[in-house]
Every structure is written in structure tokens, then in C-alpha cells.
Length: 269
Image (cartoon, rainbow, N blue to C red; front, side):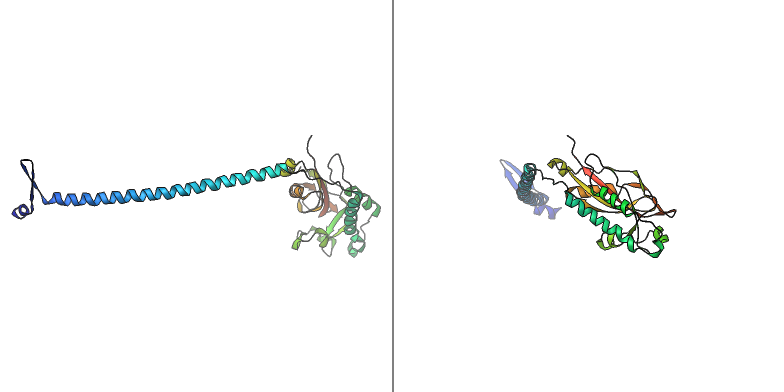
């Protein structure tokens, strides 16, 4: 106790004498340290707020610039004139007919096992002409007159291997064509969705799709034969893949068959 009393200090306030213990001095030092920490914290918060405000301001400016850019793009799109759709002329139809005829006429050199298959060239020619001409009033599934094979024997038509399109080629590169006895019949048709871009621009058009129907009547491959505008092609292919057919028949066996599906895209008045 005496040791502690020696360390005590006295202060005079007016006429009164106050003894200041050592622990009060220590408490005062701690208060000073706390005060310094508080001041440092306030300075840190102030700096952070300043930097944060700058970041927010920059983000707002970037958002405004993006909004302006989107408005400009929208304005440019709305001000564009609708693309002029050129109707398919007689020469174009003739090219389509010749292209299909070239593939179909490969049957003249088909395998010996297939020689008993009778080919009515006149019937094929008439069918090709009907496929090359588009119906201006409604869409219909064109008649199917050809079966396909890439095998050495007609019985191998039941195989589900080696579908067309390998390596990005077209159907005609991998398959030979011949007339089937029973043509596939569509039992489910799907209307393609009208592309929103084409709708806004007032575009109309037509797309012809060549598809492979397997032994179960499913479309397993499809490609564009002709198109008046590429904007419609994706929608046409998507719809074609959803078609369902009654399978084509050859010698009482279900076979893969090539079909032609035309689509017309017309805006309602």
C-alpha cells in the first residue's frame, strides 16, 4: 500500500486537494489510444466513401451509354426498309427440278438386286415438276417417290447406321435413290414459328426442306433445298424435324425415304 501511495499524485482544484491514483493515468492513456483509432477509422471510411462514389458514378455512366447504344440500334432497325422478296422465277424452279431429277435418275445404274424395281420416269418427272412449283394459296406435303440406300443389298435398308450428312455433305452425296412401292404419309405436321425479326420487317418467304424419314416415321435428317430468305431457314428446319410419317414400304419392309416439305411464311393482313 505504501508503495502505491508514493506513486499517487495530488492536484489542487480551488481549495480542494484531489489525489490522482496511478490507474487513472493508465486509463487516460488508453482513452488517447482509443481516440486515435477512432480518428483513423473515420479517415478510412471517408476515403472509402469517396472511392465508392467514384465507382458508382462510373457504373451509372456506363449503363447510360449502353442504353443509348440500344436505343440507336433499335432506331436503325425500325428505320430500315423491308427487304424486297423476289418471287421464284421459272428458271429457279427449273434448276430445282433438274437438281432433284439428277439425284433420282441415279436409279438407272442401281445395284442388280434392285433391277426388279420398276421406274416410271414420266411419273417421276411429273412429281418433280409439282415439287418445284410452289402453291401460292396453301402449304402441302409434296408426294414422295424415292427411297434411299447406301448399302450393297436392298435388305440392308432396314439398317439404321450411317445416316446422311456425315462430314457436312448433302443427302445426295451418300445415298442412291429409287422408287418405293408405298409412299410415307404425314400423320403429324408442324407449322414453323414466324421469326420475330421477319415479322417486324414485314418479310414473307418460302423454304423447301428435303428430309430423311426412317423406318419408324421419324425425320432423322433435314436440309434446305431452296429458300427465298435465310431468315426463315432455321424455323423451317426446326418444324421439319417435328414431322411424323407413316413409314414408306418396299417389298413389305419399312424403308428410309426422302421427302420434300415446302413451307410458306406469310403475314396475316
